[in-house]
Length: 328
Image 1 (cartoon, helix red, strand yellow):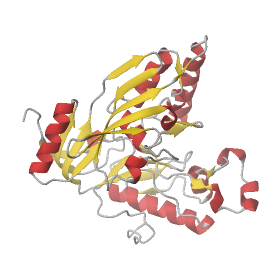
Image 2 (cartoon, helix red, strand yellow):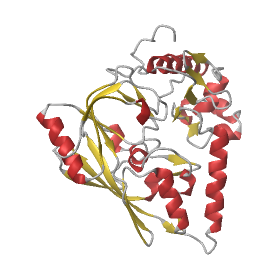
Image 3 (cartoon, helix red, strand yellow):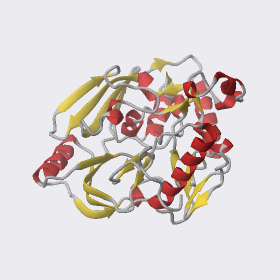
Image 4 (spheres, rainbow, N blue to C red):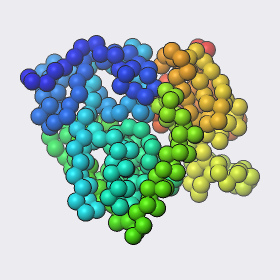
């Protein structure tokens, strides 16, 4: 085997939150050959496989992750007209920048979002009314036996904050490897999209300061149908859309903004933004998020669902049947 597989590698440096224990085994794969070698290693040693990309929307357990953790670094990109074929390991924001420079329209709303293409597909990354799933033509996926599978846009099952790869990760373990997108050709004034991109990045830098260690928005928005028409009629416009109520608004109204437990803190100006304010542990984040989830439920009768992907946990600590962690 040419590819190097390491043991007991701390995963903190591979996440934007800067939290997490070690991977029992770890490797980065850039080529298809390396990916198949990684699968073979896991199969020969009877190891579970966990896949990660840019580590921007994950919370890793303090105890780490058992088995083999594969970090996808496949980042090739070919742009032909309005067709893009890109490796899942490429930075999402880098692809957005490249598409804007090529006068292609459809991804600029995603400017400044951290993470990789693969992670964006997994969670159907979205912003300002658009999502990456809108532009997808096909996703190439390899299961843990190295068998290639192709998913059309419809087969990807894109919806708010999710995809078939997220919904059925336990049933179909494997790796999102390559993505084909078709974008719209821009106007004769390509600077408009560049200006929009720069404005979005400036907004995000204020709203979500890049110096903060964070996993992004922790909870998903709540379905508007969970609230009474009377309640919805009184909401400010910024807090709702036709189908959703902003989780940040609900958290703010529940009074959790600024709350800190251990080294984990909820930002004062964005109550759905949890940060590592020092030497936070995953347990600190769990306690803080459970506290916030409980306060929203007490105030509105709605249980927010986490968007952040959990790695290395035996059970979902935010499930309704799961008891609160002491101190939450």
